[in-house]
Length: 115
Length: 109
Image (cartoon, rainbow over all chains, first blue to last red; front, side, top):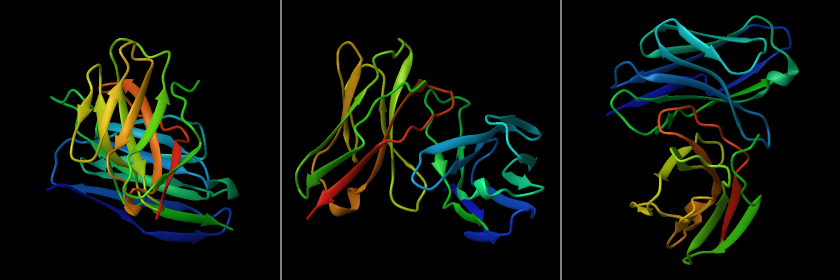
């Protein structure tokens, strides 16, 4: 069966510090991968998605970046965190090849607080 | 521009059917209606999706009007564990999902 892991579960970082969040998927090959952010009391915002190794599409311009060094690994990074980067970060995967619908499976999330 | 409109919040008594409406008046012919829910502090969970016909699975039923401009998600026997934010999303079958603010459903004992 497929599983998705995210770490860390919670993180408190000072403004201006770097960030690295990791997401890994097991039990599937060539998944589409997604990074979402949910600010307090708001809906989910798609940040990045990837259809393959090294292929990243950015949805919202910001000081965050994403990388996909391996098929089932997706990393969210920042060189300098802002207060507005606080939120709940969710990684998700889906398999679209051969499927006619888009069911995404979400990880447990990382709650980031920037102070 | 939002493709869907949902009430901000709803209450439902435990054991009763919860009916969550969604308006999507600008839906195009090949766009699907998806429903996800998000329980507090967790990632969203897929519930059901449909194109034209009504759909039912072990979690819920989806009723889509004949003109496809609105739909209703039905949880037939709501339990306290169904308390969550429910998102109605309109998208083509293999495109990105855009989550709005959803409906916060509270199941009352």
